[in-house]
Image 1 (cartoon, rainbow, N blue to C red):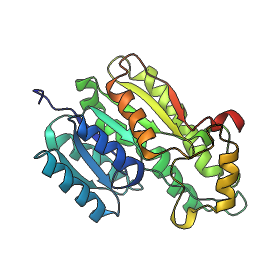
Image 2 (image 1 turned 180 degrees about the horizontal axis):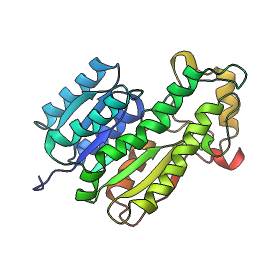
Image 3 (image 1 turned 90 degrees about the vertical axis):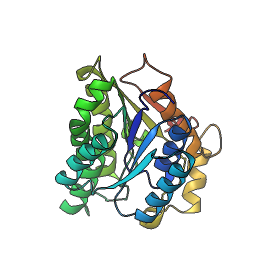
Image 4 (image 1 turned 120 degrees about the horizontal axis):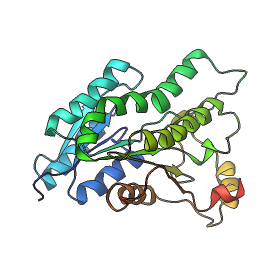
Length: 248
């Protein structure tokens, strides 16, 4: 192991894309801070698996990213556990339809806080450690940040804002900290109340040149690439979408 094992904080990493990314970084020798809001069992199971593979290599921290105090404490706790932080991956996200005529202030607060406000203030809390380690940030954006999805104005606005922050941070935080984004296309369909029907899935794939969904590994590998193999890339957002953005 290197003298200073790199440490990454990944928000929303108890399941789906965040968990896959955490596993790939762990395989590369990183220590992981697994953030969760309500999926405690999944987070604990993931951390237990990682610590069985490599002792004291992962920790789970709970935080509600709608709350400023939780967001700040998450950043502070992530740094305090190993005394350093080398990467922040803003993966946690809220996604559900809210047509303009129906959206409420609660919808605004829920989506904007998790998708835009929390990444800003979490980076603020983590910044001294990231500057010290010459670290890196990756923001999970969305192809709909540029070409909006109908009936999702708040979600699209939040992701467009995160894309703008990515570019702004890349200028403001250089040369100590690199900042990039990844925009997934059809990787994992939403679940729960935001689930989409089979017909909609077929229409999306018809407009995707590669005619298939991607996999969580496609996103995880891209994030790992930006964190570990791309020291001269900053301010960029990579669309991992099978070419879907070409036909939007």
